[in-house]
Structure formats: C-alpha cells, structure tokens
Length: 429
Image (cartoon, rainbow, N blue to C red; front, side, top):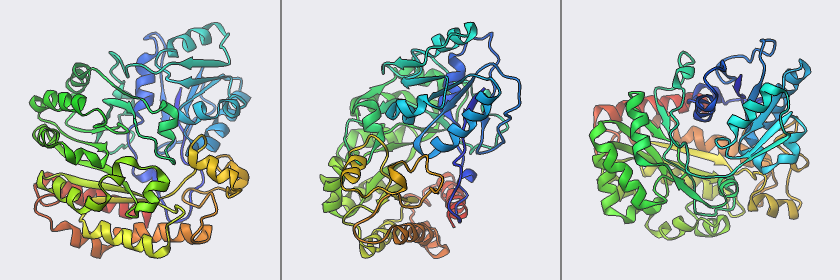
C-alpha cells in the first residue's frame, strides 16, 4: 500500500485538501514495483486510510508538513504487524527521527533502491536504511496513472522533466535535499510518457524547469508537435533569454509559477535569492516581458522575513494585484529542517514549538513556527491570511481579469483563470 498522508490539523479557514493534485512520486514508485506485486494507492487528502486492510508492506511519502500525520499512520500499521517504509524529503533531512517511526527508511532517491526494498520485504529481512544516489530522473519509467483514477484530482497531469535547483535560497529545503544539483530527464522519455498516457494539459512539477536553459529549449522543441498545453515552475531570470521565451510560447506553454518571494531587496539578500536580486529593479519589466508572450504568471511570495513589516506586506499584495497575476500565493515563511534559515533561527533561539514544529501537537498549518522581528507570531499568521483573502477578493479577481494578453488571451486561459481563482478563493477564505 502506497500512502500520501493528509495535512493533519489545519488552522481554521483553510480547506487545503480541496486543491489536490496527483501524487506523482507514488505513481513512479508503483511503476518500479515488480508486476507480480499488487499495488494500492491511498491519498488521505481524498479518502480515509484503511489501516485494517490486509497488506504485506506499506510505503509512506513524508514531507515536513505531513510528518506528524505520517508517523501516526505508520504507528497504526506497525501495531498490526505490518512493516512500514518511509521515504521523501523529510526522511532524508532527518533520518534518525524518521527511523524511530518505521521498519525501514529510504534516504535520497528511491528509484535506484526500491526494487531491493521490495525484494527484501518478500523475505522478511529489510535493512533499516536504504540510500539511493541521485542520477538521471525517472529513467525509462512511466508512472502508473491508473492508480489516480476516480480520486477527484484536478484535471492537470503532473509530469517532471528535471529535479533540483542550482540556486541556494536560505529557506529552501530542495537545495539541501538535492545538494544544489539540477538533473534532467532525456527529452524523448518525457515525450514518450506524454504520448503513452495521452496527456493534454501538463504541469511540470520541476523545482526550476529553466535552470538549464539549453535543456529546456530542447524540451520545448520536442513538445511543439504534441499540441499540448503546459505550465511549469521557473525562476524570473528566464526573461533574459528571448529564444527560450519564444520556444515556450510555440510549444503550448500557458504560464509559469515564479517565486518572486519579496519586493524588498534587503529581504532578497537575506534569503540569498540570487536570480531575483539581479531583476528586482526590473520586476515590472520582467512581468511585462512575460505578458508580451501571453504567459500567465502564478506568483509566489514568502512573508515573515526579518525585514517584512505590515506595510511591506501590504505593498507586496498591491504589487501582485497591480501586476494582474493570474494567481498569487502568499506563504508564511517556514524554517524547514536542514535549511540555513532553520539553523539561523535555532542559534538565535527564535524557534517555536520546541524547535520541531513538524511533530509538535500544537502546530497548525499556516501558523508561525518562529518569532518574527517586525511583529508577533500571531500577527504574522493573521496578515498572511489577510494577504491571500485580499488577493482573491471579488474586487481583485474582477480587476485582474481584464488583461487581453494573458487572462483574456484565449478561452482556455480565461477558463483557467476563473476556475483556479475561484478554487483558491474557496480554499483560503
């Protein structure tokens, strides 16, 4: 049984399970499992976990937000004599902690070692730790997407082209997990996967799809004949490359998720957000450049750094609305274990929840896990909620609609704009 845990306890006013996407990592693990092994997938965001179901092995993917819930699910199965394997980013960052909650853990990339995990489970002699080196992602593997059917996921197919990011932002656990590496799949295997599953609307779940621009150009050239629509996560410095922008537009790219994170240069330096520092004084020009190619922009911001005052956050929301971003996400800054941000706050004795918010019973999603400098933890949580509600207010949604180069560029883009604005508005207000 493959399990994607839910978020556990969530602060009042958020319905995060409403905006659910396919758990691609579990589809890949299922494809790696020998064909004579029956595989079931359960996603707690959409269905209960049947802990009394007869099963020989349970594998749970763990990130920091779901760690407490993942450990509770593991405990239920182990109490019934079912061996449990834990893997995922949180397990790699805190292997000693995770080992206390499982029969075996996978550190790093599961793909090179999953076959051995299953083989050892057959004989009842799993090792306590399996360590998988990072290499070419998803080599020759097509995820078992039939396991996603009937679970009510959003009508967007999750595909990956690359893993990791070469930048070293202080708050980012991805940089720590992948060691600042950026590894790409062979383009022909991506095309084969899209064609095999007849995918039409694809979200590339890359950390930074355009980190290797030449590889990204090769992907775009290969996507052009497929006639798909797609989106991805990129860094703002892609606006420097006209050829890349042209190829993205020609290949069916509808938009990009971009981590702007802050409009304050001091904050960006504190975050070590290198690509943004080079473009901060040209944020408006960068947004305009993307608009010229008809790209919708889904902007992401981190709230609560040491230089964020209430006024700064209010100005950030005004910037997002004035920029007519298709979507914007205002995240409360989280000190993930293993990051430089976490270590800085730990040394300054500014961490809350005994420093391990991910397992603390008092933690709720989108509450502050550290002591900010410019306001109280409660005030930071409150203004983060306000920022999302303000951006997705009826007035804001209406004002951002009228951009003929992006949100009104086509019927498809308008419908995407309308559907996702209503969805995010409903899940965050």
